[in-house]
Image 1 (cartoon, rainbow over the protein chains, first blue to last red):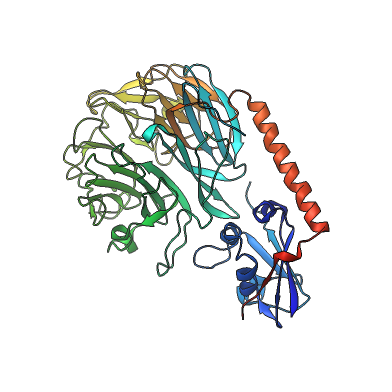
Image 2: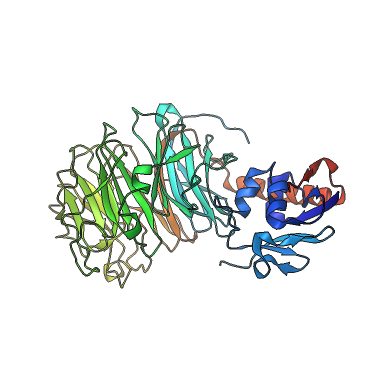
Length: 95
Length: 410
């Protein structure tokens, strides 16, 4: 079993009891979507903050896998290999 | 933070582009302001439910980053609750996602627990548990006109809901699409726009497609409603079968607000703007206009309002209370909020320099809004709570809990 870590921005941490990251384990590589399903399973409010009810990633939520923004790879189907860092950041928007 | 019920007071809930403020008063003259709640999220809709002798404030919250949700407070803003799974969620198969909650409408006293919502994308929802969970109105969602409804400047939304005392006759308004009426409690809907202009379309008198900005029901006359249209102010006396202009006597027929008196026949308020292309008060003079004869004549109400104002007042940024005489409240996109305790004859500024005001709701409640007695203490408490969260988060970073590990399926 490999461990995966999803890092959260500070503004979302109160939704998960103040944790700065969530972890999951799996056999081999997983997709970002699968990883989100797993780590948000116990945190439905966090899940809704990241994705809408169709499952789409919200427009101003950015997820990086090993430094690459997933929209430039395969979106939520982007693969995460064991040991790769998954980072959630809100994009710079608004005013 | 505890809450102690005390005597009656007046609350104005002010939804802005960057959070919610609450104003509280015991006399509608002196107001204490507290907030912000939901800082940096917009609050486009508010419903204050005072049925059954309780007060529940429901707010539509929308973060540009984290999406929309509905939260409610049963202690006048001291604490807020958000249903874990979300109060409004498009069901599987609709292939739609909630964008914004535009309207939260507590139903009649005789139907406790029933709350309606109007949303973007254009949809109407109904809750029977006091606004904690809403069901999509399928009659409207599956309406054959839906693919032809458009978006107003602010988005495509159902923004007005008016339910008659029987609960069977329901009028809604959407931008753009116009007025739709149900005679069976919302099971089926028909467009009811005859007489309302859609001057911006090739056919200016279509069955539907109008950009009706707001509708409100007369307090006493059955089947009488008023509409502020995208140019045009109208009244119907037959439940929407026919609409007639009541704009004569107003300085302009453009605007967003339409308010009606809670008890008295024939009384309504509008806040005109110069024109579609010039969304400022006529002559840049901010005034409310009231009719007491169902639109036959209008009276300009300007006492206490600025002589020079270049901000618009949005469709839900105005409200009445249920006191006697009726209070009238509104906010501008410039962040000023005004209150009148005498049906608009005189106004006083309650707040200024807030973010754009999107929604205002006022009510007579039992108790005081959170932090109203000491607004600075309330703000400080918010900061302390945020600091504690940051400290806790830092501690978790140093010492993660292995029990938070989950297993990824597949």
